[in-house]
Length: 480
Image (cartoon, rainbow, N blue to C red; front, side, top):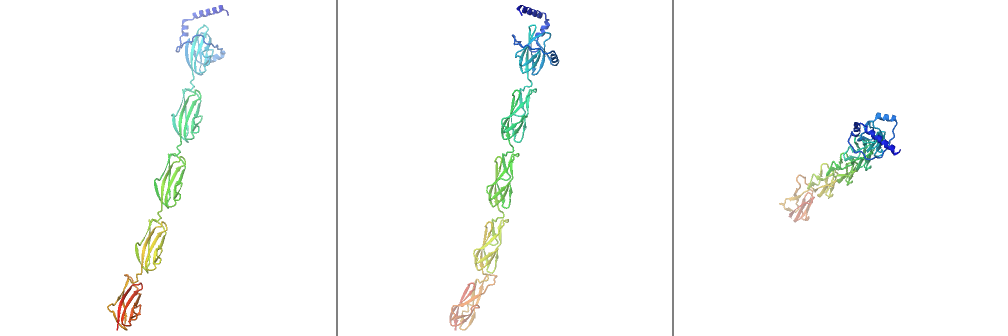
């Protein structure tokens, strides 16, 4: 095409433009929405091939129209479709500031593809152009994600936590990616369900698959079944009898705690323990300790074991020194302390030649002194009594009567008189022996009855002796 033809075409276009009604021009130039600065110069143009008529007719029936002005703007969402309306003016071509990266155009049918701002320029056949500043937003792209839990919280092992995430804006559409910073402490599944495994700390993070928006919660995983302490139902020192048992009850802290209890006795020879029941073995002291298998917490109690049946003392019904007739017996009765005490008694005498004892009965053997002792078999407690064995029928003294008759004639006989003294209330023996120190002067006729005969003049001493050695004497003068 030569230069002359081109000049003629330009002149024709100018003439046609000058013949447009003024009202029509004002309509083109007046923007409906906020004014924007029109593009200056010629931008890169993209001539769009026209669709089939049937397709255009279908689009026209389904999509809204937008009145194209000289300089105007429009905000749409990704995926929106609208038809540019340009009145009776014929469009020569459409061009895009980003070469249709954000929106497509088919003969004025605009389809928003991606979020962003683009300028679409329509060139009319009369040489004029209209610029549409198109702002495309993506309402389905998250701008924020928020969890329904505070930034940090505590969660107990054995419980689960369902986390819920809310996307903003409400039109947002995106898959969620859940992640735990420590799966060994707490894991999270694809639906936000948190499962604790061990005590510790873990951060659970949710991330939008679109837009990479995040929110997180820091979890402190605790285990309320792990004891933080233990206490026994008894404390300090507990006294029990050898014949008894005692049940110790361990209470764990907190109330939700659970653990096996390890029981131990510091002196198994004194007391043993099984499942908290203390079994005494013998008198003494043992420390009983309860320890949690989990957490190693412990409490203890001192158990002092006594034996109420063990004698703490013994007394006899006689004390000090007791007189005992050689021909009698003495019953000793023991009393063991305390009243609950039980024990056999061992009886002993320190002088069996004086007195013996059997089952508490003392049997005299001869006059003298013996100590009788009662000893408990259990506890070795003792009580003693001194027994003075006396021959209560034996004379304590004897006196010859008739001292006024100190003279006897030769050839005469005399029976000596006497008085025997002994213990009151007892019949005194009178086993006497009479003697003369000069039988040639005074001869004993009957040594038992005390009969003497005068033999020759002189002096002789008469002596009487009891069977227990008591004596008395008398000097008798024999005359013609």
